[in-house]
Amino acid sequence: MAGASLPALWVDGYAFGTRVLRGGEEPWRSPDELGFFLRDLAQLLSLELVEIAVAPAIHQWAEGQGVALASLGASGMERLIADAGFRAHLKRGLETAQGALGQRPLGLSLPGPGALAALCLEADETDEDALDDLALSLADLLRALFRPGLAVFRFEECDPRALDFYDPLLNVARHYEAAAIIVLKGAAESVANDAAGFDLVFGGAEGQILPATFWEGADFAPSSDSRLFMELPADAVPETILAKLGQLRGSTA
Image (cartoon, rainbow, N blue to C red; front, side):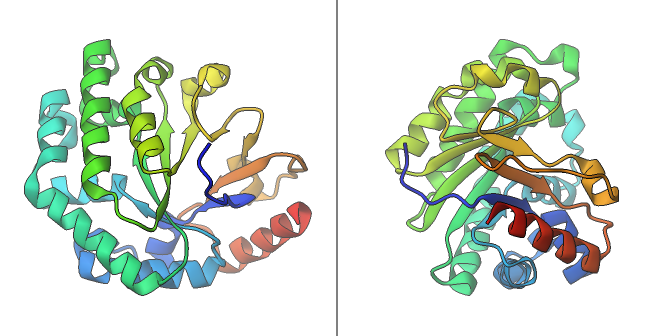
């Protein structure tokens, strides 16, 4: 297992921060400014670990190129991920993040092969060959992006079949001694017990996923012996978010 220290509360505040701190303008449009956005977000939410999100960069890059992700297919998505301009764009964002955040621990979050397939293929078009090819493309992207200071790779997965194709990604994480985390969503939650090789599985026994109803006022009592993942609603009231984060931190301290 990688030696990274993982926060008890894992907060994905990217969409929320984009609205509150940037008025809805996608931070990846200007990678030179990404680090300042992440620094402001870390200060606002008191983040122990700051994530650099790749999925919004994929959307932004495709939009800038005038390409509809849904029309790419698996081979088109592979070309996008391998594109030298796209990778230079990502690397510049990583550089500014490290420069702005100093010694604060950093993670890289990416869609898993199944989640990536869902962006560019219809459900009935996604087969094992596509999942395998996309997993290999993501592993190559990780190798290209890694730099000292990246302590964690976090994947989001929605397709239970995709769990059979994570070996290349886990091998990269092990090679760089980075923790490998997965968040299981949708149908993938039903196969949490099959998610082997990860340092932490959100949606499994050791990692809970905060239900969306919590932000609407529903009660939630986190387990004292598991970690908690939460995605902040983009349209939430900042004061409400900060108060509830304080409540959760108090209950898991």
